[in-house]
Length: 284
Image 1 (cartoon, rainbow, N blue to C red):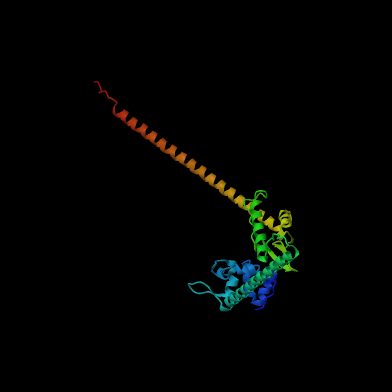
Image 2 (image 1 turned 45 degrees about the horizontal axis):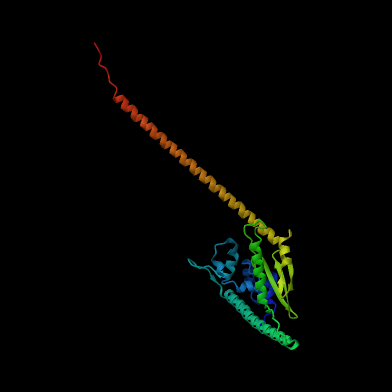
């Protein structure tokens, strides 16, 4: 199948519509439920229909649509649905392999042309920076955002800040006139275009967006972090209260036992004293 060259840049609604066109609305709905928002995300998903085994009320409707319920056994996905899934994954995988080969050839030609140009223009040998491919740019941006989140958790007063690709943001990289262009799509429908300098994309403008008050994704993460802290504090408080109760219970039991031993000792001493009393006979 001849897929569009930019299909790997489709995300969210555009990706779901494309999946409906290639396969069936059921597959697109299954992707949407699992938050599989793009082609790269789909290729990283090992088994798109494994959620059929989950006991979840939200999945009952789609379960009944795309699978058969077997008595005393696991659900069986309908052959057409399974076939469409395999067709989509195979088509996208083949397109990805072809794209990587073309990118490698293009990169080699660019490097060769650059070497030839410098060799002919000057007898002096100059060092050359490696030309980054589309995949290299993507890895650099994703790793940079991940490291930024980890190193800025304290300054943002969060226990932990993880920026996850295809969950918190998606990335669209396109080549235009031998130049790469990159745009980060946030979960709040906010797009930030990155500038390239020195052969690498500069992400500082997206960092500014993350620190801005209007960033919906960061608002949600801070809310979740705050709730987690409150739950942790409540758990610690409950643990301390339980410990104090156990200590008090131990002290009470100890005092009761000690009191019983004292009373028992007093009683034994009293009985012993009574036995040792000399009774004088009556004098007539």
